[in-house]
Image (cartoon, rainbow, N blue to C red; front, side, top):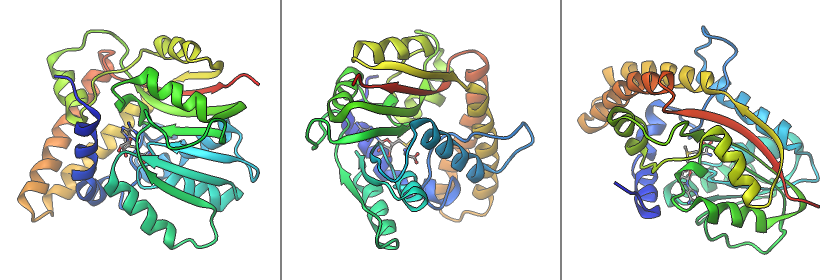
Length: 274
Ligand SMILES: C[S@@+](CC[C@H](N)C(=O)[O-])C[C@H]1O[C@@H](n2cnc3c(N)ncnc32)[C@H](O)[C@@H]1O
């Protein structure tokens, strides 16, 4: 099955309430960076990932940042409060953008905006941003060369592209991985660790950093699978409860997929030549 951008949009619009109920009530939806195997604090781990992305990107008060696939806007609101940068968040899901805008209204004075739109057709002029960031979103774009070209276009010369993303370490994946990892979130598939670096080079970027960090991915789904099962036990709505139980079951299969090299996660930094 091949998913379109409409399929992806529908998934993220329809699942917002369910994700808010068990994953993170602020709408954070990315892989955590844990301190060790016994660390079960997902929110702290997900904030750590954001801190790593911000630090690797080199964000400061003079930065003009685009967050592609910004979801509920947490990254930009957090970093703008911390360093005072300007920023724009772009996401395909209208529901998530609505949520981000409502959250932003509670932080007057931040120079931020949230736009509904796609990574493949960005409503911004060439060279508009000093930095583009993204967390676990670009893999979902069916036409990846096109979103890479758009990111390259909207970055100023010398600008930095820092992001995390899911990896498809090998070309063929099992039926189990297809069902529990890929089709579950309407993800057609992605790059291997090396393939990603090649794709960035083909889009014109210079490499700065590439880290293969699948162990944090495994810990994220171990912790969230447990949380989903616990939350399901106290959830009255049958459809929502069943969704959480299915997610928890998928989390067990996701561990297998990671161990079998069918699912991975990477942190990358690249630069548009000056
Ligand atoms: C796993 S969530 C990550 C959200 C956010 N980055 C975070 O860390 O919480 C992936 C996000 O990518 C968005 N997305 C998927 N395809 C997109 C596209 N073509 N253009 C813009 N956003 C997209 C989804 O709507 C979703 O909000």
